[in-house]
Image 1 (cartoon, rainbow, N blue to C red):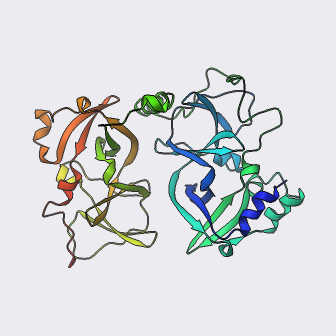
Image 2 (cartoon, rainbow, N blue to C red; image 1 turned 180 degrees about the horizontal axis):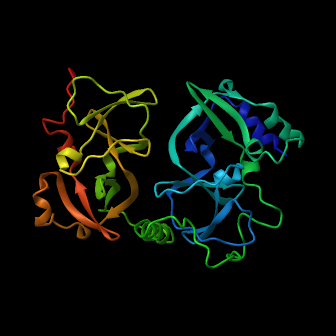
Image 3 (tube, rainbow, N blue to C red; image 1 turned 30 degrees about the vertical axis):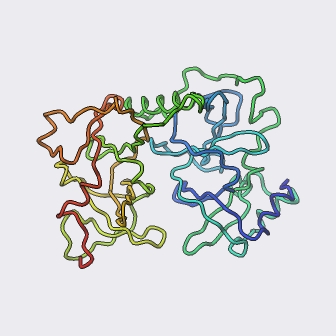
Length: 359
C-alpha cells in the first residue's frame, strides 16, 4: 500500500528528480534519495533473492543489493553495456542500487505536469494488479515538453519479499551458484574494467585521495582508447536525430538537439589519423565545453572514468608520434590497452576544425 507521505509529494510545489534512460524510455526518481551514481561494476550474484536482484556490490564496506530495473518493471532482460550506470538509493535507512542505461539530468517537475493514472492511484487502496510490475512501481507520469517521464514509486520499487532484507544485518548474503557470472557477454577487457571498478568501490573514502590526480573519461574511437580531461566533459548523450548542415567540411557531422540546445557534432578521427566509421544509434556523444565553445564529439563507447597519478602518465611513444603527437599530452595504461591522453582543446581550436558563425 502506498504511504500517504509519498502520495503527498505529488501535491508539493515542485519536486527535484534525477532523470535517466532505460530501454528508450525516460524515468525519474526523487533526487533526495539518490546516494550516488556509479559506473557499472562487477556484481557478485547471490542466491535466495528475487530474480531481479542480480547480485550485490561492496561499496566501501557496505554490501548493497543491485536490481536490474528492466526485470523489476516486468520487462524482458536486456544485454548490459560497459557504460551502463548504477544509481544507489537510500530509502528508510537502507541502500539499494538499480542498473540503468544512462543518467540524464536533475530537474524540477511541477505538480501540474504530473498525472496520477487510475492504475497508480489504485495502489493506495491496495487494489492494483500486482502482476503489472511496471504499473505497480510507478507513482505517476510527468509531461515535460515533448518528453513523457515516468516517476518511480520508491516504496513499491524497493519492496522485497518479507524473508529478504535490503540490508543484511549479518554483513553477509547467502551465495547462490558460485559458477554464475554477472554480464557473461563482457569481453576480457570489459571484464577487467568491471573488476577494477568493483575493487575501487571497496576502498573507504578516506583512502581515496584525489589531490593532484587527473580525472579522465576513457572513450573508444575506431578501436583505440583515448582519455578526455573530465573537466571539459559536460555529459555523455546518445546520438540521435542528427541534422546535416549544408556547405560544411566533412568533419562537421551535423547538428543535434540536446534538450533544446543545438549541439554541433565534430568528428575528430580525421585529425587523429584514425579510420572513420559510420555513425549509428549505438554511437555516444561526449558533450565538451570550454571557454564559450560547446560541441559534441561522437565516440564509439564511453568505457570508464579513471583518476591518473602524474607517475601513471608516460611520454608519447616514438611509434605514435607519426600520427600527430601534437594532439596527445601523454599515454597511460588501461587494462591491456594503451590510452592516449587527448589535448582536446588544441584539437578543437585547430583552424580547420573551428566552427565559424557563418558556417
